[in-house]
Image 1: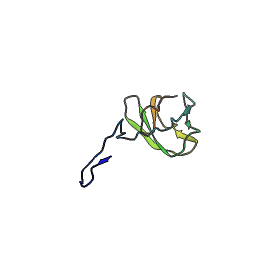
Image 2 (image 1 turned 45 degrees about the vertical axis):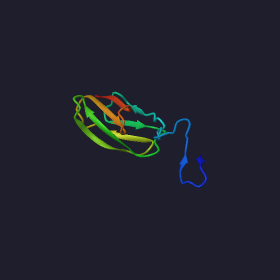
Image 3 (image 1 turned 135 degrees about the vertical axis):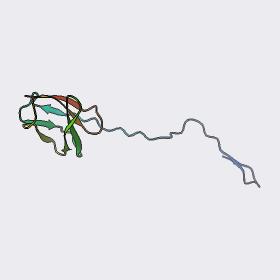
Length: 104
């Protein structure tokens, strides 16, 4: 900063880059989904589950069949009343955690 005596003007020079945003990085969660194929009860397990996450179960054409919340290390999704076929289980808000599940 340069200030000239007797004036109210100053000059500020900034060198380098100034960050204009903050990026948050979340720890990647690892899930186990079993048994697959499933007959009655699907188990969704994660030792890294630190907070509740939402799940969506969709059929082969994308219709939402079931939604809920997973909140503990080992969760159960009841599938005994569903028809035989292919389903997709999406975990959390990001679709990177998506699993194909076969119902016998």
